[in-house]
Length: 125
Image 1 (cartoon, rainbow, N blue to C red):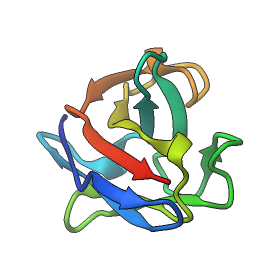
Image 2: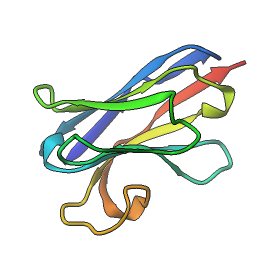
Image 3: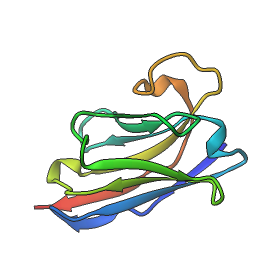
């Protein structure tokens, strides 16, 4: 599946922003989907993920209560809704599709075989 992330931009601390991840060549309902981010000078880190059935999510502690993940099977897209943004949320955000039958936690980037190109989010304080 090919993924295309979009929706990043410059926002103020406390603002909200929604990122989109459009899929092609496969469906978002056929695999688990996740979002990762990479801040300048730091390693890529797990943000949030949804299982294939769409009935279970996992969150990084740093975003719990502020970020949510959802999907639209008609539009074949996954979304990352971000609320109460902080300067430390500044990063390039990547959506990812889990490799079918992959074993491991959604937090492990090695279980994903499809990655979007990234969309940059800058939060000014």
